[in-house]
Image (tube, rainbow, N blue to C red; front, top):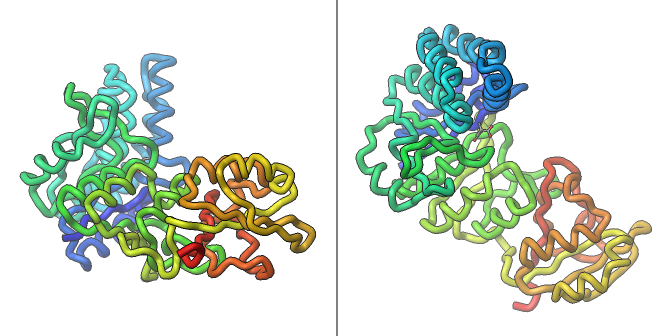
Length: 364
Ligand code: ASP
């Protein structure tokens, strides 16, 4: 069975809704999780602003009108009526429904529209995405509840219900967590549709296969292609995740328990560039890592650091000493890092995340 998730960038307007509906029908997908419409600004950010307006003035009407207009435009182009749902949400916010409930309504109305468009059931996340009081997925409870879920259905992402009956938001980007939890609970395959072709390597090509551990490492550096709390959920149950593009037919990146060819996390080497890093060699050694070699390439000191299972924290600290800025480095899996290969030593700037080169041949 396939559980699919479509992010906000795949649901910006009516044209995108129609495209998503086609993908769902073509792939015969029985369970769909959606984010609130994206775009600039995202509907979620507009709802946050509407809530702030309510806090300031006791009414959210001015900002909520912008939210309503966004949804109205989509709904009327698709021939769906949304006015009653939208005014109910405005009234709920004005009546003091609380932040989490207010902000969750972007996913709620977005999922309702897609369910209507497809003729699928609307399955409210509060019935299935059960959370603990500290807002974490209560997996056993999710598992027990999804058993009774009617299909095919569309489920709003990003929120769930706590044992006290209250709706609670997941962290930003949390529809990924909702989808990972539901896919795991149903023992299904998880397909995540977004606006990029997958996870890119440092040479600009899509990485076809990644292990869960690699995906976790990538997330710990702030990669936005996956929500970090989603990975442990799929890892625990061995759910296969494919990240693909709503707007292209690229094959995407598959994340599973199969390691990417030739790479592993257990024992790793990494290159660290920059004179700042060299100046802090002592601290790096104090992190329990060894500097195996260093060389100057194109006027920059490059160090080959050798360690056993770098922890994300150690890597973060090391990067802190380096003049490689994690915000300007992209995900990288390099091939056989070597001190003289220029291509291996330079990281492309783009998505704001760093993926350290790993070479499993070291020490194996
Ligand atoms: N709409 C929420 C956000 O903007 C959740 C999500 O997109 O998954 O963060």
